[in-house]
Image (cartoon, rainbow, N blue to C red; front, side, top):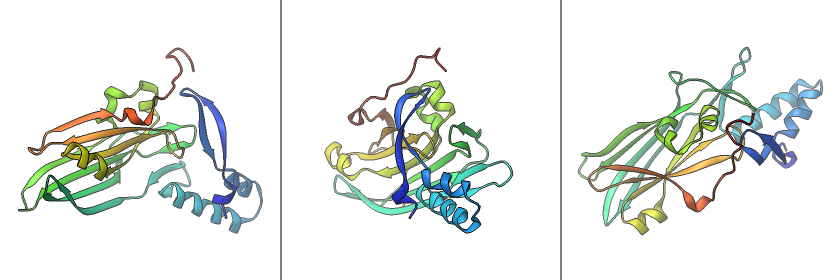
Length: 204
């Protein structure tokens, strides 16, 4: 299995020494002349990193469309949460050490129990730009957004967790999104996850 052959190696880039997942098995498979092994390795990598497709000519990679529908509760009230992540061709492509990627937009809609809309917004990574170094912003994608039931219970507000990540690695910056009972949004970086180390702006 490909996943059993993955290794984690230190990689020096503009964000400092980070543990980045290296697709060793895929590299080995591509170095061999066996087409079936290569295709199997590529398929498993696509599944692991939620890739929908890789353009054979440009190498442009896009993540899968993801749709989540769930009932959530806050302060004794029930809501319907809909989250849809879509590769967005209107956004600038993201070039990183792992290749060329289509960035994502994520549509979030929260509906009250009576059918009225509490919150409805399409997010891109630029909604988090105030918290991201410019170099990271250019080379990252908006990866995911989910309901945080633990923090929602603690804060007695609807809390969502979002991540802006360096594609196909374990390097990401987490965020906390709080939607108040009247639909107002506040965004903050999740400080509980620790602080990332970035190189100075004049370092390449």
